[in-house]
Structure formats: structure tokens, C-alpha cells
Image (cartoon, rainbow, N blue to C red; front, side, top):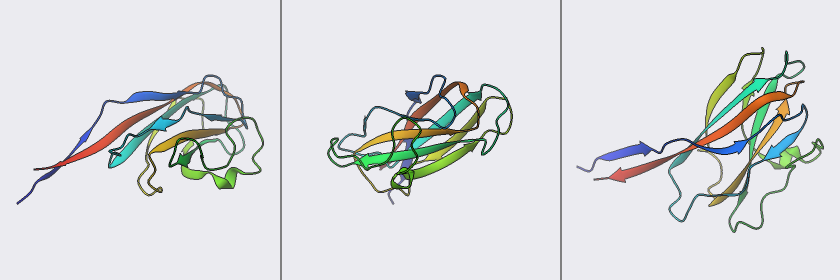
Amino acid sequence: MATFTQAQSARNVVLNMGTLASGTYITSSAIDLGPAIPLDITLEIECDPNGTPTGSRQLILFAKLSLDNVNFGSGPESGTDATNEADLHWIGTLPCNDTNVHRKLFSLQGLPISRYLKLVVKNDMGVAISSGSIYRADITGLST
């Protein structure tokens, strides 16, 4: 009988959010998952609020997908205009209810499969962040 095992790569930074202002979007560079797309991608997002969050008190993580690394889905990548936010693929939200550092893991499983993606973050905390990053770790599998 075949045995299937999974492995997770080491985490690597894919986006440094710096001091992202409240209500603002930031986007990673295009990420090439390679011709052998991983079974899943684990994303870890962390942030340090610069003050007490107000309003929605969250960071929102989205994806923009592409089959050719040229034509990505529509939706905002920077600035504060949320008109086409609904065009983005929602990955999840990181609640930030206090001034502590917050961290949460997400999976890309369930999104349409594409070789290329960009990660988009919206700071919806009501305050800027002091610092923040997104990390990526690939999940691969082997059948023996």
C-alpha cells in the first residue's frame, strides 16, 4: 500500500508591510509557485499596531491570481480606493483588538489554482502599523 507524506518548507518573508497607514493597501511582488505547484501554501501574517486599534480593528489578506504572470485579477494594490476590493480573492482576516503583536496562519487551499499570485493586505485597524510581515511556507507531498 502506498504511503503519502507531506512536508513543509521553511518560512520565508514575501512581504514587508513597513509602517502601513490605516485604510491603505499594500501588495507583494508576483510570486511564482513554479511548474510543480505545491499542494498548499501556508501564510503567516504578523503586525504590531502603532496605537490602540479602532473601528474594524483588523488586517485583511487577499490574493490576486494569474495564469501567465502578466494578467492578474483586478482590484486595488495600493492607495486607499476600495471601489474594486470585491474583485480580490479573500484569504482571511487578522483581528487586532489591542496594542500587542498579532500573528495568524492562513491557507491558500480553496482558491482557484494558478501558478502566479500577488498578496494584497488592507490595513483596516484604524491606526497605522509599527511593523508587519507576511511569511510563506509551501506544503509538498510524496507518495511512496
